[in-house]
Image (cartoon, rainbow, N blue to C red; front, top):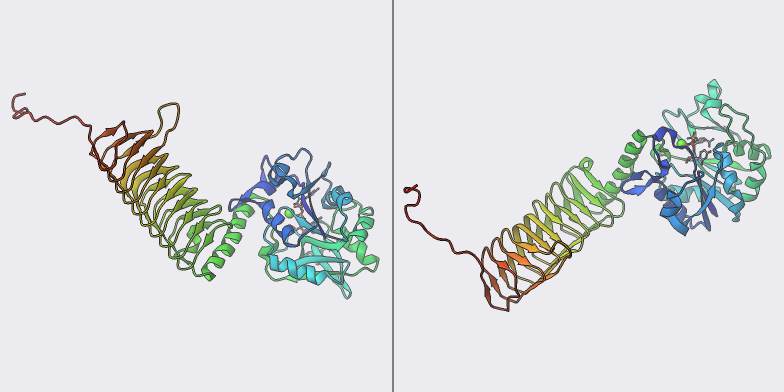
Length: 445
Ligand code: UD1
Ligand code: CA
């Protein structure tokens, strides 16, 4: 089977500079969901029909797809013609690039349904079928698809509509594509006219009716884009709930499709889980957490925090108001508290960075206490440098560590020290101006 994805439309209703199929739903372009469907059926070739000058689509998908250009947008039948020379397999599946909601199970059912037919249509009944092509049935199967604008009064009342997904015999398709005319209300070459041509030739044409109209919705404008997010989000959340994840308010979380969540995880409102984030079991994600491509090991507790490409070890507590930037690797049973920023650093087990600190480009051992106000001075205005802190070290409040610098195991940095040379293991580093007392100073002014 070869798959053709139509994506050469003008995207007029989306009011956009780029192709509408590249607009994102839950972090992925609409087209990616359709490409996933094509992968599901193990297509020999997947050909996407694009508009002239389309650069972004090939940039994103590279050679996972083949590309055909439709030079003039003369309708869906014309779009199929643009790709027809590439098709070799004996069956052709047509998907629309703007319809990302079909479930894999439905597609599999549709393909099974097709096995003894020449052309099959995936259809659905809609309460309000306005705008869609209507399925005209007869006693042998389906006789035609009539577009809304070409419908008679009685045809307009038909609620079974064409989803746009067709599967057909390639040889018959090629033969009949030649015969399409643009003799209709829109002056376009309709792909859907193939149905009438096949049927008139006595071929086996039928429609596979699925239950859920949400699966076949197309995205033509921004309102449908927003509704689309909701459709996919509800599905994703449903999956996590079934797998034993507690979500306090499912309408107030944002979870992208690539996210994995273990059982007994609890998720509070206003949480964003993006990219390939993985959350192991028994993690508590309190309110206001935004994680992108992160890995949280079991038992982590985090709230009101943002993290990007960070890994957090077992039972570590993060937040409120922590910011973990790319390359942060936090050990087990650590504490990363309020207003702590960590970047490109490793933190050993049981180390505590409880409040108001910046740790950048550093490797910290285990059991370290990083005092309030500690700054890793990693940037000299030109380059970044790394620092190392050994196990059991104590960094007093408001100390500055001027990188590159190494602090040995169990060393002690006194509060207020600016560390500008290495500190050996077990040593004290102290460097601060001693305070002076001037008795009765205020009285003598
Ligand atoms: C189409 C179907 C209609 C069906 C509906 C389902 C036809 C004639 N009508 O109508 O029966 O109920 O989808 O959503 O097929 N495209 C091209 N080149 C073109 C025109 C369109 O590549 O010249 C692509 C678009 O990018 C889009 C898809 O084909 O991905 C569908 O086109 P669209 O104009 O949205 O068709 P509808 O009017 O929605
Ligand atoms: Ca459409």
